[in-house]
Length: 624
Image 1 (tube, rainbow, N blue to C red):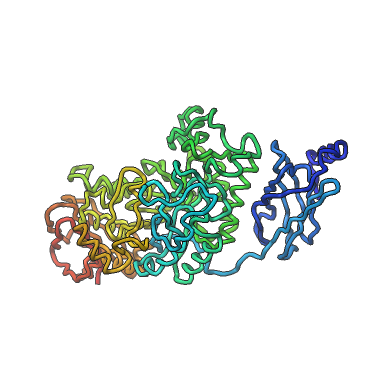
Image 2: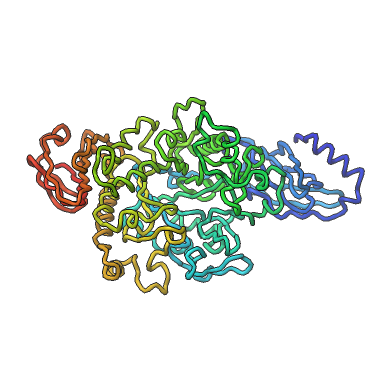
């Protein structure tokens, strides 16, 4: 066993001042709580926390497991013990013994075999259709966990910014609904503990107070595993939402910090300037870059300092632990450009080193393709940065949808914006791995954005489901949920997720009632999305086929997805009037076909000299 100079000094201190160590040994936490044999990186850094734990000396006596180093920090309640798990080690319980004078304490530490089940850690790609939901707002499957004694916030459905009681059981109960809808993956906002005061409103999950524990108002770690196992049995993937930029002010290691540089000092750095472009700006000042990366996202979210190697190891290991422990298939990393980019690159590299088939998408909320492409692995950045990140969120494409479908046609306006944004795909090393979407939990509802116009909505959804990339929808899109403005109103409860709800949007009867109550074509929308989503599941031509598009004319955009076996023609008419298309213009892709099946409208169409397209209509024509 290697013993650091700091430990040598500590031993001398103990022998010289025995009165200070005449106390029993208390350990409150060891994180991660277990580890596995067979990782490429054989070391695991254990955070050991307990009253004055630095004066206790750890040792192990287990075949194939040794203490590589012991790191002491400013706070005497912490020590970091790095174990090396050698190739010859076998699964079992390592007795991690701590000794302080006449006292000793043994902590059982389990090392396990890694799972060989192929139905886990699968990754996600353009074959998938992701359904994003917020557990607190989707369905309340277990009202008994709504209010937990000792936790800081209970349920108040009358307040849009409070907890409403949705939970993991609610997701489990509705997996059949998602499967029938045609989804192949489910991503939900963070489920780890967010025990923050009611005035903050941590229902969204982005202010962690324990990174190894599922929030008890959502369920338990075991309930989370149950959800993942059931989803996998049904052929659904699960994507976990993570945050490494910040935690919540009530996090236990913020309230008693290991080191003075565990988080950035709010009084010194303030809040972030939210200018992520400064990270790659060749002319950015150190002042602006520092404000972006070091500043707290909000005053309730302490900003982690990943330059501290102990912090970086803690966060990376937390990710690896959740992947191996749970079997999740992917990760969505919140606020990806906000931490130190060197750390985020190392995080991505380490994850893919241990899980080569995995995928992670970084939330890169940038305003243009170059700034977005910078974060995707393989981008030829002049500063030499390599992110190792496979997927990025395509906010520029979303902006083109939201603005283009609300504008009158012009040289550079209207539906031309969809064409224009895709024409810049040469910037992305792999645009087919971009996650594309018509909305999410931070945006106004797409149906509201488009003026509650079903025709525009249908065009937006048809585009997202057939263009390049990995499509993601937001819960309730299928039943034309509305909302915008304050965050709580963008995140309304799914109707029918609570026993007391008057209308159940999960059922056909409930959707008919919603249509009658709102005047929206809810039934038609749900049937349209279900039909296209299920059709899409086995269409390699949509997943990986070539994309050829034609310059929009008269605010009509036509593009084709094609491979050696199939051709699909997509027609998007963003006009308030019907249009007549001259099909001779598209003969290079129509290639003699005279008939096709329009999936969007469930009808056969004839492909002669011209094609009549109704006002504000989308057609997805499978050429036959």
